[in-house]
Image (cartoon, rainbow over all chains, first blue to last red; front, side, top):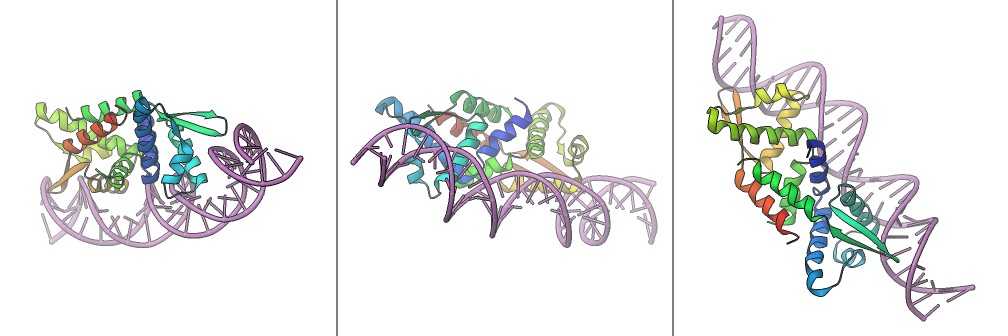
Length: 98
Length: 98
DNA sequence: ATTACAATTCGATAACTTTCGAATTAATTT
DNA sequence: AAATTAATTCGAAAGTTATCGAATTGTAAT
């Protein structure tokens, strides 16, 4: 992966609220294996201290960095993490100093 | 690790030039086991397309996020990566969706 | 002692980011 | 059909960041 792409990914995770958003999506994704429920943005909005327009913007940035996938279902938006990318970034970080 | 701290680390890696700086320090660190040489900032400045004041600023941000350690030796500055932190972040990223 | 060099600090500027409220769009419920 | 709800878009304000050139500090070489 080239440096610019990597920097873009880190930038997407560099805002506390956006990172929390990402972590919640990841957690919901994990939980979905047991509950069968998916990650609805509505629920996340309620649990963060920022407004809907801001959440919408943050989600777009995460998706733009390929960190999450989104899918519109009726009037709801569903998100799930891109596991492969997270793994890839994790490996690069861990291997840098090996 | 709490979200704020994590976001700070990602922010430190979110600028392409700063990330390149970090990766170079990591690479120099790795090479040092064979060559015995350490990572001098002077050499890095020459290899990037940004000025010394900017590099100085970037290094401070990396150090401030605990991503690197710095040591002044004479008129030179030596940097090395904080391996433990990189590992820790890598693990969090990889485990999020497991 | 003077010069040269590495790095930092300062002050400025241009660009970008986060966030909001208001308005809008689109889908569902009543 | 009207009202409600989820999400997006827009425009703006406040704050932050990257970068630079000039000036400064501290160390080493001549």
